[in-house]
Length: 125
Image 1: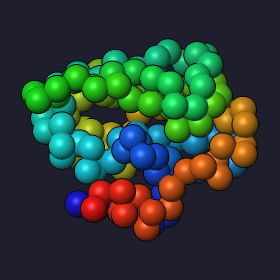
Image 2 (image 1 turned 90 degrees about the vertical axis):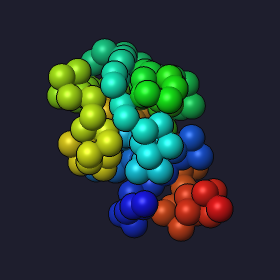
Image 3 (image 1 turned 60 degrees about the vertical axis):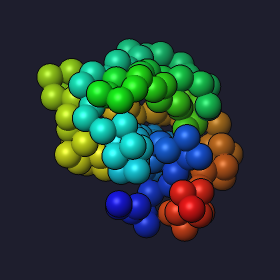
Image 4 (image 1 turned 120 degrees about the vertical axis):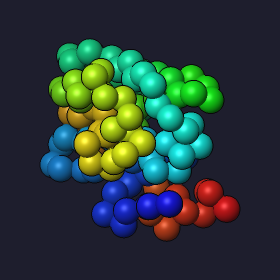
């Protein structure tokens, strides 16, 4: 299971890549492996304002349907449209082609609440 050192994480298994006031997020390798084969991803639309910890979409897999939670508050400025045609990208490349949304951060102090890779690893023990 991959946990990349240069990303931040949530306790609900989302990963976050921070680039200025924009974050790219998706679900972790652990989450995709627990869900197994992803068959559908439904994400909120561009322009939607989201609150940290609130759902930004759902992910349907063979085993279950789960909510995906916003790691930070802000506006969704991009959505990975490729997941509509190929939801299995989440399984194949969760930290790359399987990204889900980009959010323009409205409250930068929330970044301090995200977990480091080391702290995220400890939540999985």
